[in-house]
Image (cartoon, rainbow, N blue to C red; front, side, top):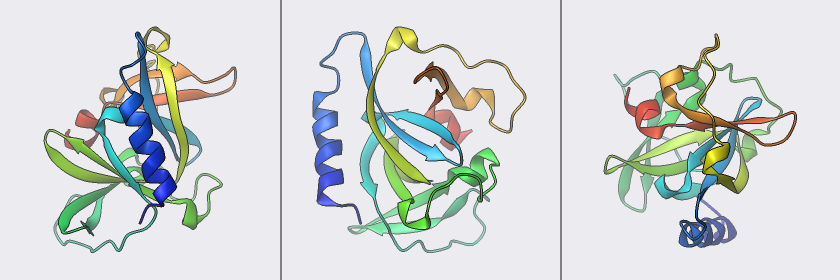
Length: 164
C-alpha cells in the first residue's frame, strides 16, 4: 500500500489546489521514458503495491482488479493502453505505483512506472498536442507543457484515455 508520507503529500496538494489563479496541479509520473501528468483533482491516492487479481475476458489494457479497503478497483496498465514496450525506461519494479483516480464517478487504478511528484502548471503554458506519428492517440491528450528546455510533460485527458 501507499506510504503515510505519499498519502499526506497527495492530500496536502489536493487541499491547496485552486488557490492559485491561472494555475493547476498535476501528478507527474513516468511510463517508459516519457513523463505524463494528470490533473490532481482526479486522483484519490497512490498505492505502492497491491495484489492484482486477473479477470478473464477483459480489455487487453485492464490487468485486473485490486481490493482497496473493501472496494474492488479495476487497474489499467498504461504501457498496454499506449502500446509502449514494458522494457522502456530505467525504473526498477519496486518504483511501480498504482494511482487511483475517479473519473465519471468510477474509481479506477492506473499502473505507472514511477511517480515524479506534484507540480503547479500555468494553464496558459499548456499547448495543444502536436499532430505527430506515435502510438499515443492524440485524443488521449489534453496538451503538452515544457518542463525545461529538454523535457516535455504530456498531459492526459483521463476520461478519453480510460473510456475511449
